[in-house]
Image (cartoon, rainbow, N blue to C red):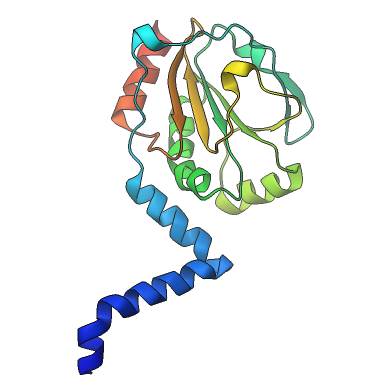
Length: 186
């Protein structure tokens, strides 16, 4: 008993380390940790914003229907690049779903993955998510090109990128909601 009292911190560290080695427990631990450290994303200052010049980006729905990002020109859009195997992506999905539930009829949401449709459908069904998922069928326009997942962009009606966030974030924050509401009403 004296041994455990003296070395409890080391034993806890070894247990957590062991759980991180096991694939079945690694993902939930990483998702939990990402949710704890995720904060609301910051808006880009007006003088540093980039405008979207090329909206032409063909995407395919999970049901095989082709949609083009150009349909969102003049609308507020949220574009999220993600994958089912990405712990930060999975960590931010509940906040994205809540945001979609409240803004899905006023903001164009694009959750874009390069994974197989069957894998995405299973993930969406298992998690109970209802936001629109698209399969990337062609290279993204340069302004939306990212090597990291997740990467999320919020685009104004004027085509300015208001937020460009790499990594997990808390998207259902008061700050993001206020930004979306302001942009919708412009």
